[in-house]
Image 1 (cartoon, rainbow over the protein chains, first blue to last red):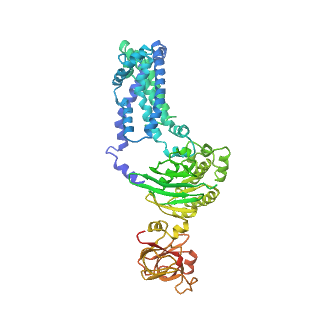
Image 2 (cartoon, each protein chain N blue to C red):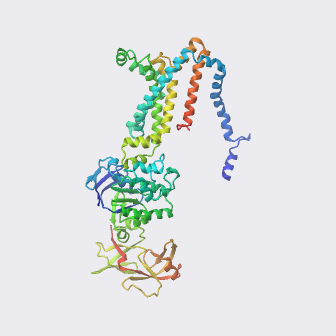
Image 3 (tube, rainbow over the protein chains, first blue to last red):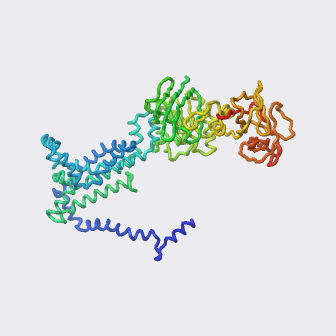
Length: 271
Length: 352
């Protein structure tokens, strides 16, 4: 106790501020930089005005497209991401390392480059793109295109976060379950998944938030049907900043909901 | 029914350590596996349970080959060190998850005296309760072999002793091979029908507790089982009823048969000697009587440990019951006579 008091005093500056206060003063500038623009957005337009424009067809259409596509992308990311995350969590060696690097790549790749990469595979000039268009299921300028772009950019969140969640489950518990005569599948369902659940939910939430906000790759893969970020861009360029507000506010609210989810049922990976 | 577990030439190579090749047969009995940490005790259990795949060798349970079978198909029950209870299930759910047939869970909970805490989650259970639930969970599967990995090591002394005594009775009622891993010699001798001493991935000695304690095959086993008296001696005379050995200034008659070497390690367990007053009349006329001076004593609770200088290179460690210690009013500097029965002396040939 005495030692603690002593060290506190030694870190107190000449002004009578201790190091923690100085940290907050410095970091507070950054904190304000996050909060002020958000508040400013909500103050920029009267609430009634925003509400009345929420029913405009472009807003409704883009919100429908975004929620639908982000839900599908998140579903796909979870469906394929969880097995990959489990495999990565339970495998060591150079192959797993390389696989993890490939998973992280879309996170560090600029989204527009991601869009170009995807266009080379699914675009109109590519064999796959041609075939799909011929079959009446175009992979660009379609909901499928949006989903492909969002999945590429957002699914790593599921894989990386779920991998950490699986690694947090003591392997001894899995061994215990199997030594009780339960198959790998029963063990995964009854032991591993429930214990990794909050972490997995965090990954799914992050992936959804990322998918619904995805702009760069979506823009290149599917300018139509317009997702909310694309609609914001179009409104801004064609009609001015004011017209971009309603959709932007909608996206902020979705992001805030994701944050609430992260801090309640899911286990916040940055907590 | 008499199930038998049989390991033959089981081998597993690690970077720093080689396990086996090891042969071991466990019948319907409790085999206490005793060894220091890192000696391969857990590897042995892991190989039997199927957590670790051996590089070579076979593990047969009643003639059925286990190597290659997945964990879940082996019918090998394992109680893990900290219990490994599923933290998101209550004690009841843990046991019922494993129960092969309904009703078994309640029966086992009653047997292991955890029926009062069945609705608690593992984090709300005490260490002892956790191990009881873990044991109930494992037994609920009706395993053909029971493996226990230091289940008592994290418990406080009184609970450990109590649970150990209960386990003794429980193991008796099971008709299956039981392997009990521990690094504690007392637990091993208390629970084991036989003890296997493990070192560096190999078996040093397998035998009944009294055989391992009194007739260790080498210095490591002697040391690890608390046998402190390892004295350098030479064989002085070979007779039909045993050899006579010379240790420092002392002569000991033994019932041991002639060893291969003329220099030997003379091994006398501290609890297998008697202390009496220097002029006391000996009760056992055939025992070796040596005179000495107490140079140090320690109260170890259930016994006093004396270091007695008898003219050998190192003092003789002797355990004395508290009643004797008090009757003789022993203290540092007391002169005593130590009776060493001939059959208490064990000879380890040099190089073993």
